[in-house]
Image (cartoon, rainbow, N blue to C red; front, side, top):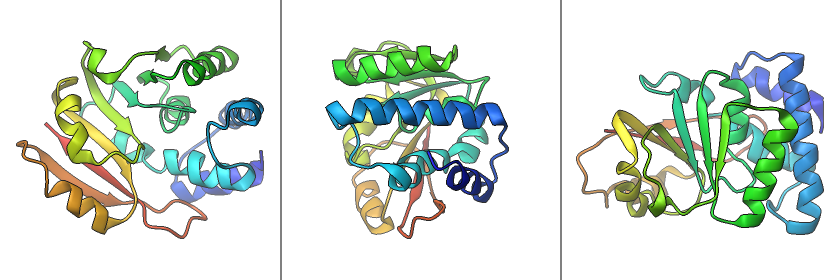
Length: 207
């Protein structure tokens, strides 16, 4: 891990950090690199992995922390742990559920949680439709259109809670939001991912 790149990225995002945070991020990315050689969980490595996945995930930290309810967070389709695992490293008082239906990815997530000694994370190997608990916040970075997921997600969000979707181009987002028929409050916030010259937005849908 290029620690200097991570440090500069965190500084640009305005995220306070300690040596412990850096050590946890280093261990996490090193473990992901080891598993990625066999399973190709993410199609990125080196600086690209740090920018497109780690810093991208953390670009939503301050917005999520500003939500009125943010103690219990479920990361839908967590995959290699983005954005849930990096968020959990910095939100020590939050309770995170990393939801992943792939057994190989879930095994990686469990291994990472143990390796990092993170006691605020639970890995759940299930499909979204089989989740019965409710949460303050649901996050996801998947490319699935928001309008397709909103009914499934609304079912597991507490009253006053929010969905936070990591998205790219504003034009695509607007098209997706036009197809939402639920009564919800929506805000779209542009985020600047350090060292990434691409459009990135967070769509916050509150109930």
